[in-house]
Length: 433
Image (cartoon, rainbow, N blue to C red; front, side, top):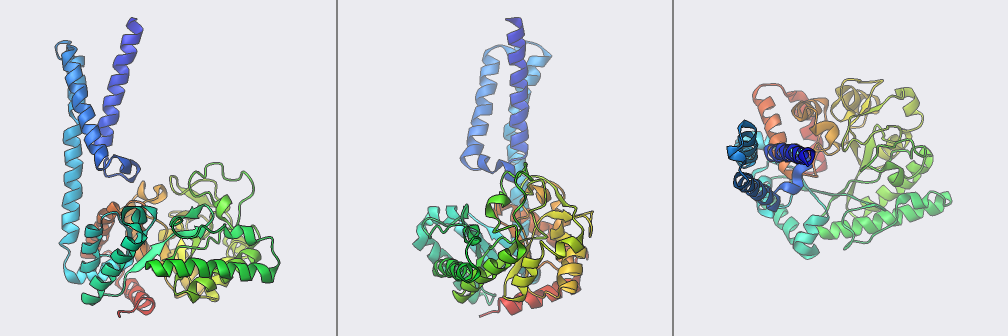
């Protein structure tokens, strides 16, 4: 019995420490479920725990008992402190002067839950685009979302700003974030076994269906298709969220290129742009960049002859944008992920391939970036020639990420020439009405 009491005492200590950690880190994307009602539950539970501990005599039970009660008192002030930091950062960003807002803002595409909050960002020019997913439709219905997006675009016109990029993830298959109500199409991989003419025709039809429905909603950029080559079976045992084995079209780069190019043409014919992903490729990596750092150790010459064929063919034959993933291309730049590597973005994509279209990052909220040094990643990405920084899963992280860019700009740590070149590309692709 004594052992059980001690074990229980230890568990209460561990639970208290977990509550304190969660409260202090409430702004972390991994704890997004704690926001709103979750915050209230956490605070209420900690107060109840304090009351129970006092009533059971722990305050009179010596130093250990009092320390335990004090531990359970900490979640509330820690949460208030974390909230104060968030609000201060948000206030600072919203007070950004117009010149800096319109210089840096076009580089950010953000997910959102609150229309009123994102409307302020859009009208002030603090963002260049929004990312929508199923919760946006669920919150306001398809018709309501269409009205929201229309209202945002009208605000931009009135303010003399370029139209908002409105991005979505509608690949087909397991990544169909707006289906329903949009049509749930099969994955493009289901077309790989068809004859060349048939698969091209079918892929174009898939693209046309997605494009028509997205355009009707107000979306002008689809973050698709996936051009990563399908990995060998069981190669990546730590792929919990990317699930590239289920999303990749084929392990044959020419088949991937044919299907993807036809799909992109269908999208573009419907007035929706494509962002092909995830260069330099996720098919050969062994970890999931949603949570962990990932390295691609294959030499660049070998990748040029296989994995990168679809990227080069689709980019050369369309107006598609390029999404850079958070995998480290070790043969080119072993010190940082490709998404913010100048050697990769400027050295390979811009100079070697001569691609002068729009380059965007994968979501900066992913663990491979956010849990390292996200500020450094933001600065290096802009200095590398990346045009758009995606903050999708947790749009609230925009304030932290924009603050990083603003501080770097004020301190002269941003490459003005790179930003000017990016501005030219963005204006050419998204001109002011």
